[in-house]
Length: 327
Ligand code: AVI
Image (tube, rainbow, N blue to C red; front, side, top):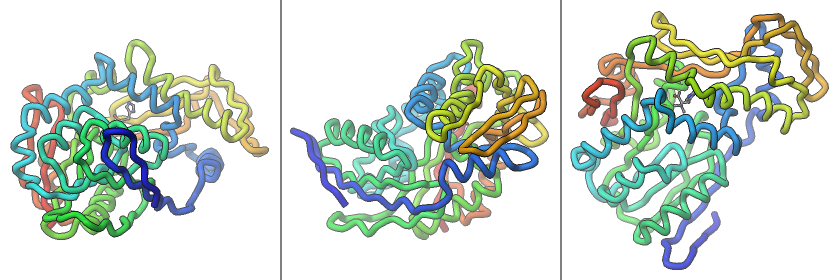
């Protein structure tokens, strides 16, 4: 555990509970060797990928971010009423976002625990929050929340209830089965009586979803293709990025958006001394983004022993924020 304080700001305690598991290299080599090539979406977020994702959130076609913010702004007092006071508020994601600030300002948690895999992002966001809210106790945890997680024991603050805030519809980047398992993990973390406030993108017209994931300015394409550039930078790969194209579409039967990187030619690529062949039209599957109706998500939550307490949506029914209680 390390401590940091900057002038006029609160103290931030940092913990690192990253467990050595499969590395970026392991996952890329295994993913490219598979009969249907795939690389986990969590590897989008190097420094450049995170900047591109911020740019996606500002795009006219990418409605989720601004819609979720509007829901939070309109309903924050009701959300805080459901959460209660003196909570230990855990956030999946390093969160110095508008949504997080709003929730912290109104809920005034006894302890705020942001969790992120990127230590740099966690430090930047926590420093910013400590300056904004000098009264706030921050225990920041470096961890991979896509894997089972056990938090360190935090001491010295009165906690009436544990709550998790998981905004951004990041839950959609898991398959429904993975999402249920993940939520069981959250249940274990907060215990019976704990609350989960989670942003979930709603099912909607295919044309809206196709545009949201294949925007006219090509920012999402750049975000997806940056994965190949990252492999070149960090793993000594020799992808010729221009020989691939971004492909994204909503599959109504599956209820999710799929993103792929499609090879435009027959070509050979090397990563860390291994050789991979691509046929024209062959793809690397890079992401799914599941969309749920309110009832579908509530059913999924029940499967992880969560009781739906309340749900807030926007007038156009684009996005939902669910409050769920662990039972
Ligand atoms: C982070 N996640 C919720 C985004 C999504 O909408 O699934 C990632 C993203 N991929 C393309 N655009 C945005």
